[in-house]
Amino acid sequence: QVQLVESGGGLVQAGDSLRLSCAASERTFNTYAMAWFRQAPGKEREFVATIGGTLDGGSVYADSVKGRFTISRDNAKITVYLQMNSLKPEDTAVYYCAARGAPGKRTRSTSYDYWGQGAQVTVSS
Image 1: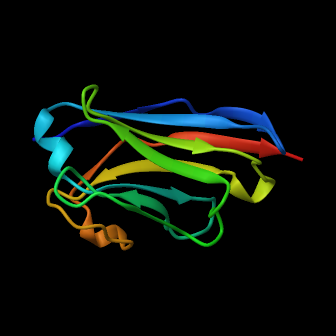
Image 2: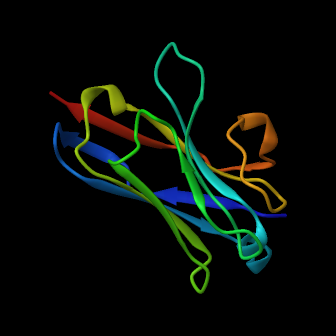
């Protein structure tokens, strides 16, 4: 079973950058679509970005982060990243890494089978 471990969250100021990492436990992960979601206090979990696996590739972003965030993966390290630039206070949330268990990028959280524990990102104004 795939296990996902996130790291890299923290407290930053508006305009700063931060990179989240999500390390998977097995190489099967490299064929899975991966994604980042986030959940702010009192709000529903929302899609941030997704990236295809070795069979499909490509990436999709939420409009709210397009041009500021970049999702990438290093298959040798079995790790997916979320580079976040020009951070805004409204980006404050717990960020979750997710693996779909199959190829094919999706933006709905219900399409993902495995989840990390979450990483807190706080952006002060």
